Structure formats: C-alpha cells, structure tokens
Length: 603
Image (tube, rainbow, N blue to C red; front, side, top):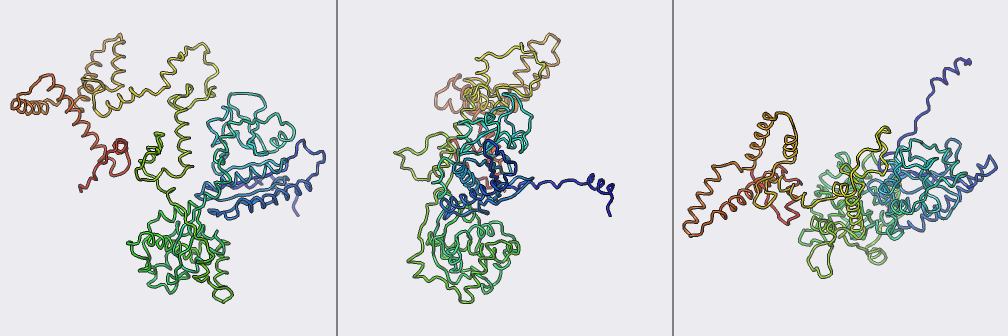
C-alpha cells in the first residue's frame, strides 16, 4: 500500500503532458457560450451544453445551405462538443492543405454563426497564430504584438473584437492574457473591448465577395476517364480531392501497379472510357494540370494524338486522374482514409452486381456538361507588369493575350501596390521598415532635448527620389551620371573625401591610398585603358579623313559614349551569364524594356 511519502514523491515528479502544436496548413476554432453579464448560477453546465448543441445544429444547417456542392481540399469544417479544464465548448480543426480558400470559408461560416447566436464568442487561429491580426497588420495599434495576442482576439456578432490592456497605452505591452481572465472580461468588462472598423475591414477583407466566391473556389472541366471513376465521382464528388492529392504526392511505391506490362491488374482499366464533366477544387485542378506525367505502360496507346488538341488535353487530364484513383486505392499509406473505404465498398457492389455502371445514354441525358474557362491559370510577365503599372487592358486594346488571373487576383494585386505606395508616402517610415509612432525599444534615459530632424528633412529622407535612384543605377552599370561626365565615384568614396576635407591631421598617406582606390575603380570601368582608346581614335580618324567630316568635340563625346556603351553591354552580358538561365536583375531589367536576350548555347 502506498504511503503518504510515496504519493508526495509521485506528485513532485508529475508533469502535465503539453498540448500538441497545431500542424502546418491547419486551422482550429473554438466556440464558447459566454452570456453577459455572467449568470448567477455557478453550475450552469447543462444550460451551456444545451446552447452549444443548438449552435451545432445551426452550423450544420449553414453548411448545407452554403456548401451544398462544395469540395474541401483535405478536411471539412466540423464542430464537436468537448470539455477542457472544466469548460465546455465547441471545437474543430481542419487541415486545408494547399487551399487557403478553405480556411477563409471556415472563417466566413464562423462569422455567420456568430451573427445568429449573440451569446457565443469565437476564437480562430492557424499554424501562424492569430492570422486575422496578420491580415490587418498595417492597421494594428503599436501595443498589440504577437507575444500578447493570445485570448485577446474574438469574433462576436459578426464583429472582430480585441481586448485592450488595463490602461490605455501606446507603448509596448508585456501583459499576457489567460483564457479565464479573458472570459471574465467578456462577461464583466465590456468596456475593455476595442472595435475598430479599419482593423475589421482589413482582417475580413478576403470575405468581401462571400458567399458568391464560395462557388468560384471550384472548377469544372470535361475529361476522359474510365467508367468506374466516373461512377465513383457521380456518387460523391468529394472523392476527387484525395485522388488528386494521391497523384500529386506520388512516390515509387504508389506507382508500382502502373508499371506493369499490361493493364490486367488495374482497378480502373483504360479500356472503357467516357467523357464527362468533373468538378475540382481550383488548387486540385492546378496541381493535376501542372504535373508532367508521361503515360505509364498500362496507358500506352490509349491517348489520342496531338492533332486534336482539345481531345488530347481532356484524355491526358483523365489519364492523370485515373492514375490518381489507382494509386489512392493501392498505396497502403491511404488505406485508413474514410473515402478509400467507401470507394472500395462501392466497387464491391459493382463486382457483386448490386450496382451497375452508368450507360452512355444515361450519361448523355442526365449528367452535367459544365466546363469552366481556364484563363484564371494564365499568368505571364507582361500581364503582371501591366497590372503593377495600373494600366490593365484598355477598352480599345485588341491585342491577344489573357488577363492577369481572375478579377480577385487583379484586385488583390492592386491592393498590394496601393499599400506599397502608402508605405513610400508614410512620413513615419524609415529605411528599416515602417516604424510605430512610439518607439518601444528606445532607452528611457535618452535626453528629450536631442536635436531632431525638421519636417522638410524627414520628407527628404523618407521620400523616394527617382533622379537619385537613376543616378545610382547608372553609376552601378558604369554609365556617366551626368552629361559629359565620366563614371561617378562610389558613394563611400565621396563620403571619404568629405571626411578628409574636414580632418585636421596630416592625411598624406590616406590621400595616397584614396588615389590608389580611385585609380583601381576607374581602371575597372575602362576609362583609363589608353591603348584601347588610342586604337579607337586612330580608326575613327582614318574613317573621318575619307569622308571629310571631323570634329574634335564630337569625337571626344562619341568616344566617351561608345566606351560607356561597351562597358554597359559587357556588364549586362556578364550579369546575364552569371544568372545561368535563371531569373536575375539583368534579365528582369531587359524584360521590363521588352528586350529578350538569346539563349547562351555555349558548352
């Protein structure tokens, strides 16, 4: 029998098991019933549970109403009752994979849920933390740092509410908030909440086109697939997501059945193909289309020729999809998925004769034939450059070429550019980034009477000077920064000259060193290459004597311009060669000037 000493020893060695961190690409959400003011009855667990069950039923109705035909990339939205540390709540966690839109669909559902139940308070976070604050980062007060944001951000009655610190401050806050303290504030101190229309607009900006945008997250395409695959997708369109993912993350083990010499061992043989409309998530369709996947041996000779481009594209996409279903059912890694078990049961019913595959006539008469435009996948540099410049495509512009993504992509890009311009025009922004009005890290013992820059000087420091930028670029490329001038000295050298001018010591040695640096720099640009310049002058003099046109001033100016042009071309070619075919500054600059350099085929 354990003694009191044994029990005390056990308690001293016991450590609570830490809660696991939220996996990447996942979002978790909590729904609490917190009526205000707090109920007088201490034991209100039954009332809380009843209210949460009602919220759960409303969530199910909302899902049916808004997401009737929606396809999730990985996991769906769900709410389950749980009790943690004596507190009953609704909790859910969804892995959205690569589909960020799934995360925002969940935020939209939670926000709508909060509008229908005024006594619930909702928390939502993903693997990055309080991502609603990240969306509104440019409008947040200076005290609201990620370290103190836990349990401060809530969704209530469709609004974003943030719990302020105890005392009004614009300085850094170190006070962290526990859930129990946040619960008390919600029920007893409503004045502690900050409700900012600007912050809310930024935090919920991605929801501005909901619920219409929910349908836009999907893409319908016509593909040629085995009849069994068409049957499965007709039974449940959500099977498309695990099949596409199995194709997208395939490995040698999953590919084994497709490497056989013939298709006799396949579940989805390529000998009974039908052309049907299939609904994808946009992310899934992009993953399927973007993958280079040569037809395996089991599909050899089953694809039509490239002379019929549309038929070939439909058959190729269908081949990839069928291979994804094959890998999904074969790979042991996927066998625990509910979708895999359901599909195997449906296929067993077909084998036993309990179910029959659809006929061509049935598919032709009653199945959907929708096919969406794929222009949203077309993005090239010219479109991006045009959108960044704010030009877009004018009404009279009849040039061929797709638009930059869809309307949402264009709107987001314009918003980013507007934010960047806002930053450039922000007087409080410095070279190291946007500064808060109050500097948290400043020492308290700094004298308040220190000399400060005038408004005019601050504007000059923070503003973007296009002429100065162009001058710097010319100096970097070895071009003259002004008319009739040679390559300018680098800024550090100019600063060093100023230092020497104001130095009272004997700077003879430093001046010699500076002269050597200047000579080395000028030699690097080719200005001091007298042999090359002399050869050029001789050749030009001979040419000018034949034509009778000669001018010393013009000769010197042309010499200088030609010399600079040679240096510029040399520098550009060396920069392009250094890029090794990848993106880089030189290639980007030439692209912006609509210049395309030929490929370097030298071995």
